[in-house]
Image (cartoon, rainbow, N blue to C red; front, side, top):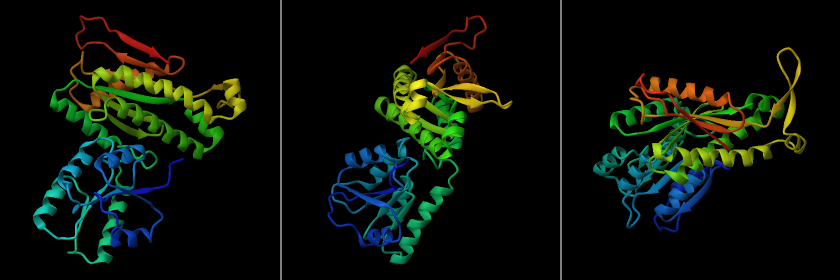
Length: 325
């Protein structure tokens, strides 16, 4: 299950929590984590995505505009709402902060009650944002398509990895949807951690829905990231079963005709398509190719990732590389 919902407050060295934040938190059940350096802020945000990041825009030695741009340009933290808090109102600075991606700017221009209402509104807008999956807090379909389109327009080499769980539905039926949600969140962390460890600035992790995920990576990082995912997944997932099922390596399920059959421990299949040998021109085309590779990966046993090495040229032989855990 997810940890306690947290608000990160970047104090910039200030020891006291602003009265506004204290009063607002008294009306909610969020935990507050106060951080004094940008490095600590990013480490905390990557460790567990917070509900909101509040930045003390008056902190000495800190550039709130640059900090906001950095938070919003990182694919992992871009989905987190950022609120800038200042003790002085400046229309010029507010415009700069909103231009840098701030979700809200709070100054004495607004009375305390309205400021608290604006914080509530930030959370409400985030919850309504269909581009973010509520279980994993990962970017959804709209953000995935936008990121693919950006890679195409930038004319850079990239890879799209379509990850899907094998035998998840049967697990969900046996262990309940609450435990199924826990698996969905656990897998999101496995994917995020693998991408963050290898290519934090250039990698992207998205959640289509259910047990389907998309990674967008530099081509040169595909093997390392996918191998790490397979290894971590296969070491952690058996621990999510009962001791009896883990020891047997399966449990008994029933098909639609009521016949018993052995359901293996979950595995993960990843299909990969890259722009190295193909000219990828549209997110829909990329999605179709990635789906094709994912279905091929699911036809194989165990946790695997398969990389499409085929070319658009009909004169060249298609090659698919398969890697197993």
